[in-house]
Length: 191
Image (cartoon, rainbow, N blue to C red; front, side, top):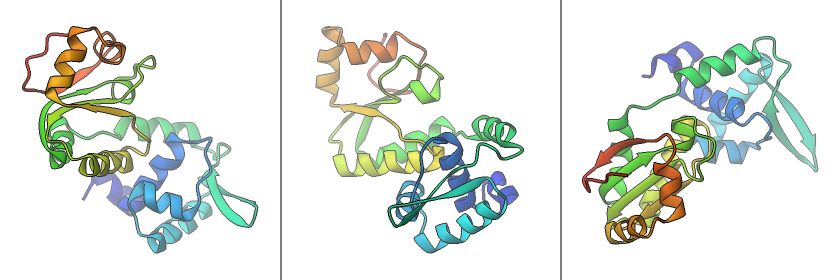
């Protein structure tokens, strides 16, 4: 079990905290929270009760449905947010392992959220052969649940990627011209 999950009581609570603190201007309903964190609705309701009691989040009502949002007036809001940002990570091997379920990976480059580069259009660049779109979407959703943020990504076949590199495609340049980390490279890209 993740040491932070032990500290915060459960992995579900940890994922919900990340969701609220990393998206502090967004209100979420129970169904949306369950989907984004990959947590059963009944467990989400239980954890919401605890987070409301600790005043980390607040309830917002309107149009008949309840939604919850981060409470920026929480006494230790800034410290908790900084702590969560500093401790939210997966090692590169785990990220590759999660993405491998989608097909034969040839290149995985990370930018944006993973490097702090604000100018980039995507967080993950994935190149592979025989990539299954549904499996890839599911793998990215798993990463989003861990990081508590929506990730933007682009996936290409090896042939399409090589063509785009050759014509200096803007999206590809946006990744490789700004801070990025290549965590898997079976192509030998020199960008």
